[in-house]
Length: 247
Image 1 (tube, one colour):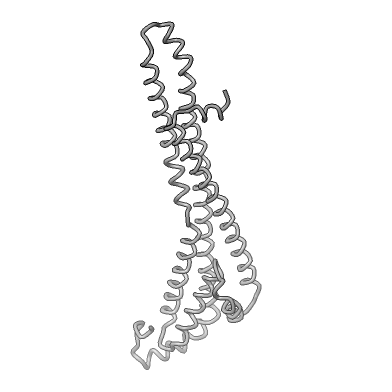
Image 2: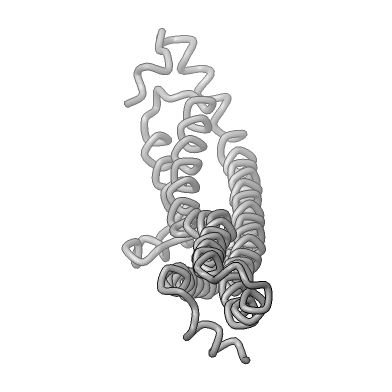
């Protein structure tokens, strides 16, 4: 008796649980392939933008390039775009101190990171949920199948020979029920592995994005703020302004 015969001859409740598990498996693999593809693209875009960022291009020119296609930005380029945009707006406010500009630019870019990560994390919790409940659903189908087998076995006569004959007929039903547990594990194991892998990849991207922000802020401070701090300090001596003057 092959596995397909076991599935076809299983109790209806066992078949229902198996079909649900198969549906979970299809859904899980669809999400896995889609998320892996999406994360690979995100990693490639990050590397491409970092190569362009460190190529020596002027930051203003890079911002203008991003501005020309601002509706199609994502990843590190989107983080750079919103950060440089916020910086430019605050820099034009002469009463803003360098600390205020740095702080608000960082907040803007961290918000952009959270939006990017939220997009990348879509449906990944679903994989974790499938991986968690699939073994229990398989076990539930097995329990229902074995209950059905023993109910049928209880209908036999007390004659020992008759019980043995009926046991030989009904025993395959136990094997049919155990198929549900096997399929539950078949669905759960790859789902849990994929969930851990995808979560690790997202954490790596999060770290890469934050590293990029640190490097970007360092460049802004080094190239611009060091030249204007003395001017801002002189203005602050003549005007009693605080950070709340920046809107």
